[in-house]
Length: 183
Image 1: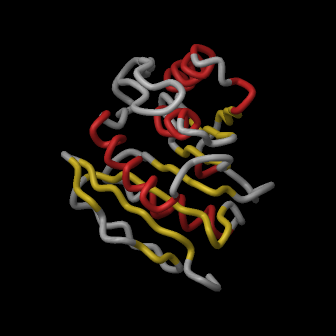
Image 2: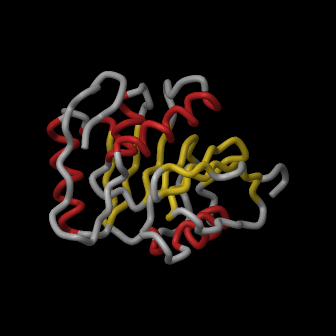
């Protein structure tokens, strides 16, 4: 697992020990970030939220491409160790905040984010539940772009969001959405 582009291109990342975390494949991340780049133009100065962060590969990729900051939310101890090690290895502590908790335990937002990345466990409907809850708690602005990875064939239907058709990449599906106007 490595950073694909930007300031840290080619740098290898640590993956968590054990089987509780499933890191996104390089090919899946490459496709996702191509999709994001075509919609955002660039990542400069974005505030990023990486939910179900695991090793932090998604948020660190965004930082490598110019995002200003990233809040990583992860609860698994092995994943947190890998995440913190990856942040330190990249000397990115000043642009990162790590919250050790379940995504489902987050309370009302202190601020909204420009880009939200989710890579939850497959086949548990976790992405839909998390997006719906965090939307109600003020984590998203009307312009927030949300990218979620699910298992191929999993539907991700969330009331109040404009969604693009998912893109299949290997065993994953990539979903992009924004809050509906007035939602």
